[in-house]
Image 1: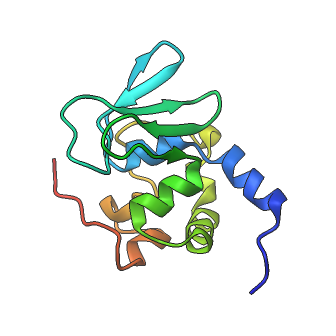
Image 2: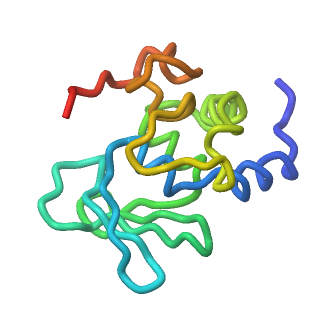
Image 3: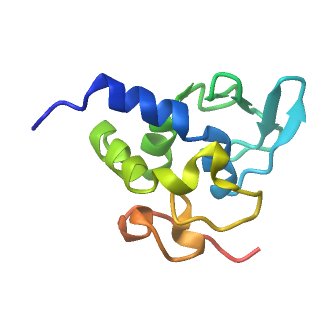
Length: 134
């Protein structure tokens, strides 16, 4: 299998917003200084422990997970997929996940989190959760 070029990985990390991924996953974010915080989508959280640093486009859980990383790491954790599969999912839905795409909180996108709308590459992934209506 061909190696994913480093330039492609850097492009995905630069162009796809981890904030949009978290919002699509149902995380309600609040501004705290230069960061955004919310309940971690990866464990039962009662106090906000999920931190996003938009300037670096990185996330970290200060609670039970004690994990963090880039948009690729977020998709790997959220979907339970390999590094390569996470990159493929992000490539497939990159246009709708860019910060400049006009994404708005609560909006359905055809990318990561598209189980809400029923479109996008992740809808077809067997581990994509079906979200209950709010």
